[in-house]
Image 1: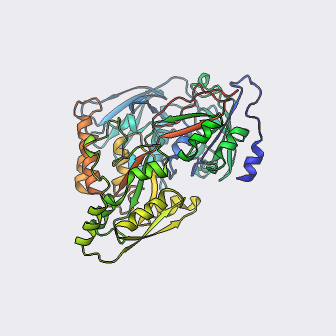
Image 2: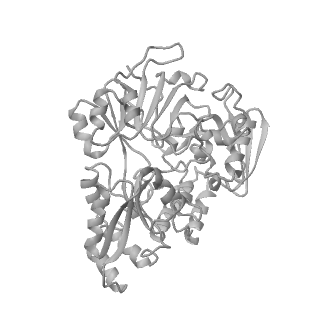
Image 3: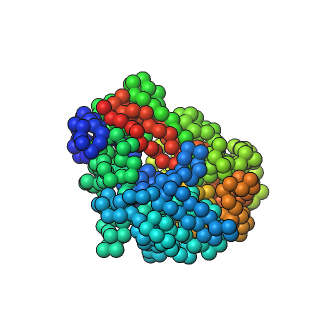
Length: 492
């Protein structure tokens, strides 16, 4: 990373070009696990993949699906088929047509590829029919009204068949999409450099000539790095907000679908005992985590959706309010007379894990912190599911049932125990079979959230808004709930 930062230089602008804007965004956040949306193993990858891929739909700032590559869609009366109409004249970044045939092949790859990590979201997709060059129909195994939402994320990012039919392995480092930028160079774990894609269907909205992407900067140096021009946009930890403002940087706090979590594996000791899981819920002082660990950024939350979102259930507001005496009593009644050994796995031991260690120790646990290198964290926690308790976060999903699949299903990346409680599955099936504009939709979704929160071992902690710091050369970013938006952003 030191090499890439040195190469980054100081000034954050470049000469105007005939193809578009005059500046370069230098974004310190993260690099994707892969440039292939089908094999991406982290929910947050969607932010980076959206630079080079376009999805069929888009999620607006209220969390609703709106047109993107498609102009419209219409469901069959029984909800088992939905027909989409593409915008006319779409092309991939290499100039090849992005038509209904390409969409069919891309979606089928997502459903059928052996290494696909989005296949679980497409399990009910029986067939994709090409009605004409611009029109395609998804035929489903049963009623499912979630597809407009689902196709706004990685699942709906259309990959160029001309590339993956020759060999999909190249996609890991060479994306083949139709997004606002084209990847020019990529060094794993170091940097990615992109230029504006003049063939992007909304190219007139992209006001910068290029984009440079870097891993998250050291929190202690991010303010200085933004001041110097090494970066001009960065994700800011709560600990640095006041310093950034004092340094004259612009700071935006943008609501997001991200919720901090403890991933609990109910098949591993000590959490194979439901009473230990219950005690964990009450042992955590979430407000202290927000105040001391996040420096006041975010708010206590006991569920996978943030307040104001259609799936947020207000009845769960204080369901596991901090109660150390209750946690102690639960463990005592369950027969635990000695401290219970538990390992807290994390990629960053400072802050939240240290607070959790103290909180758990106070109620009868014997907690130790295990640090996993960030490059190995996803594999060990989300692919192998080999850790009993991990500190991380849920990046949210465009479709609420998709979030349920990831968090609670027997194929869910963030469900270490891989147990899908029948009552949770039944509750979310009702949501899937309900049109998004049905008056009962919100009620059914919120009831499903309640069933999941009170049944599954996941321990939700607090909301995590995106705190974006930028130097004065960069204009204000639009506020997108699902994605950080770059349309209209300028760099002087």
